[in-house]
Amino acid sequence: MSCVRQQQQYQDTCLTPSTEVKNLGVVFDQHLSWDAHVRAVSRRCCGILVTLSHLRHFLPPDTLPEIVTALAVSHIRYCLSVYGSGSAGNLATIQKLLNFAARVIAGKRKFDRVSAVRDRLGWLDSSQLFQYQSLCLLDKVLSSSQPECIARQVCLNRDHHGHVRHTRQDDLLHVPPIRSEAGRRRFVYRSPHLMNDLPMSVRNQRGPRFRRALKAHLLSRRDT
Image (tube, rainbow, N blue to C red; front, side):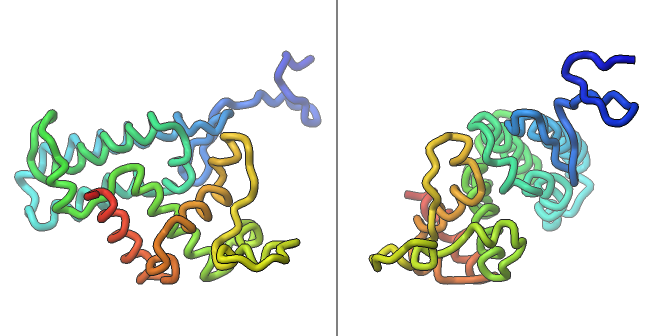
């Protein structure tokens, strides 16, 4: 039997391309827009948060932030350094989920403002959380040279092949020249760019010290 258009033949089997596929819990769509994954995260988190909002009066107030973080916010953080490179609309959806989580913790109503609650909890907004997760992953790559497929694409300007003139930019990470918008979404472009924009006092740290300094820096920028 012949395969219809857009199907692929493998031995005696007709394979139909999928528009979405899940790998390690992340939903990949055919355009890598991450819209499908954000919808999946939204459905999962909303279900958990609605349940917790009904149960919050039966839970110890001191442990409620940890429960909400473990059961709901953890789904947002998982692979955010990958899917966070999608559209501004996706980050807006993630922000709504973070606001919902803050309302559950504080016992706020649907349209109550939660900026003060987020400040008290020390939570980053969705854009900052994406930057934080991406830079923490880059710090891990720089510290361990793993995974190798990413580590070999990340280097200092002074170590970049063909770099012969010494400048004040030598100690910054090399940012590859990319013209397309899709290229700018790549981890090896956007993360070194973000790292180079950090103050030297943050950029020179590694491991837990880097994570603490980075979060403090991002929170301070939100206040300016």
